[in-house]
Length: 125
Image (cartoon, rainbow, N blue to C red; front, side):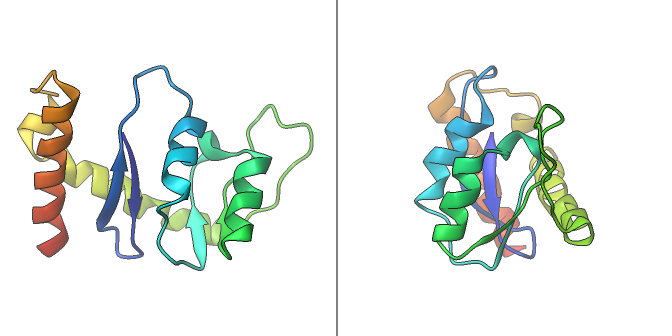
C-alpha cells in the first residue's frame, strides 16, 4: 500500500501494488495525481533520478534520501525528513482497524474499499 498524505498526515490518495513490486511502480502511478505541494517527503524506496526530475518539473522539492547502492550521495534536508513520521502515524492509525491490520479481505478491491472507508473516517476525525 502506497499513500499520499497532506502536511497534517491525513490520507489523500492510495495505490495498491503486489508484495514484491518496486516502489517505482507506485511512484509513477501517483505522480500525475499529486496535489500542489512545496515538498515531497518519501523514503529510500522512491529514490530515482527520473522521479526527482518529475517532482521538480511539477514545482515540488524532493526530500528523499539516496539508496545505499547509489554511487554518488544525494543531498536532502535531514531535519525536514524527520517529519516523515506523520506518514508512519497515518499507517498506524489505519491499522487500528482490525479488518485492515489483519488483511481480513483477500480480494484487492474489497480491501481497498475498506482502506478508503477507514481513511475517510480518519480524515474527518
